Amino acid sequence: MTDGIASPAEPAQPPIPRVSPWQVAGTLCWREIVRFFRQRNRVIGAVGQPILFWLLFGAGLHQSFRIAPDGADGMSFLEYYFPGTLILILLFTAIFATISIIEDRREGFLQSVLVAPIPRWSMVLGKILGGTLIAVAQGTLFLLLSLVLHIDLGIMHCAALLVLLLVIAFGLTSLGFALAWRMESTQGFHAIMNLLLMPMWLLSGAFFPIPPAQSGAATSQLALHWCMRINPVTYGVAGVRRLLYSPDQLADLWTPELSTCWVVVLGFAIVTFAACWKLAGKHTTGDLL
Image (cartoon, rainbow, N blue to C red; front, side, top):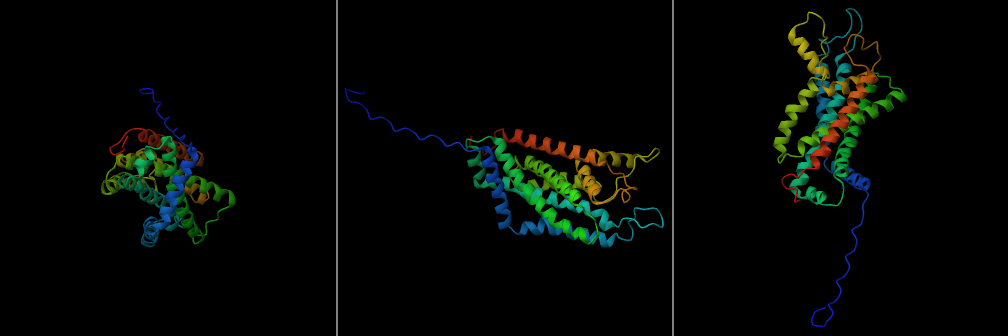
């Protein structure tokens, strides 16, 4: 009240509607899927190039590659390289999916999400889950080529393989998210991804077998063995190979046990997602916070 005159009451502000974090994650996930179908060139880049590599290397190295005792029918390079190509598709999809983080920051969409009254983990989960589902969908299409190789996949093995691919794709996409979060240009992101993820793939047993760590082996062979053994992608490739082929076909390969592969792949996915959650909780340039 001023000079005996009552001031009009201010209108009450409507309450801010509460949105479920899971609904936010689902919406961002669906946005990534819609964006993927609107950018058909991503299908060619993520699936076409690994398939081309698989066919070219398979044809070129078919005669010089043998994993079997002399005189026995061994695994061809097309069969050996098949799990590695499958992981390469997941890897390329992770790269293309996490580029959207840089694009969203440049266009202002990411800033609007960051200032919204939602937990950061829901935003992180939505972005990563969208890229993961796209990667698994593309990998499933590539799995149809297993009919050409006469790979006998039972229902249980097929279901376990899809779950394993889901976990591997989640871990790789989380790693891409963590790298892209502080990037400001797609050129720098591509350089870092090629510098880190491609060597991880090459040192996973995807393209050439893991050399055994035998007594009396050369120092370079031992170093290569342990570099490939501590690589988490190695266990993703080995797990896929264990589910696709029989133990007899893998008898002459150093391959981790399937249970070990599951533990390492799950641990890798959890650690990378936790790293993304922590990074997203910090202020970065352009957050408008």
